[in-house]
Amino acid sequence: MLKISNLTAAYDRTDVLHNVELVIGDGEFVSVVGANTAGKSTLLRSISRLVHKVSGSITFNGIELTRLPAHGVPALEHFL
Image 1 (tube, rainbow, N blue to C red):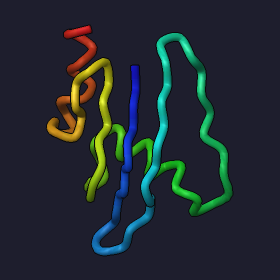
Image 2 (cartoon, rainbow, N blue to C red):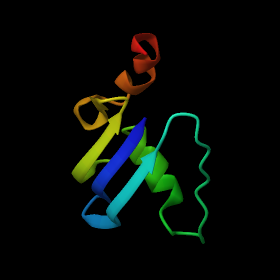
Image 3 (cartoon, rainbow, N blue to C red):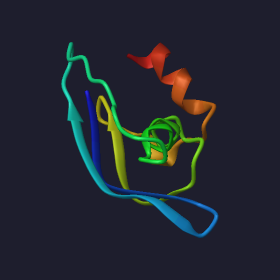
């Protein structure tokens, strides 16, 4: 369902996430836990396309999210 491969994300010129790998299958529940400044919000903002992606891929049901603008991500609901 959701696959993140080698994701590195940044704010301006500062890398915040480094080589994140995550696979979430259909029907699975996942929580993201960590200390302040650990990258939880940045990970979710990257999936939502609100943070500039430096490298890697984010795939949802076979659709590459990194090719979509932020407003295109919620629109995927109509195609699933």
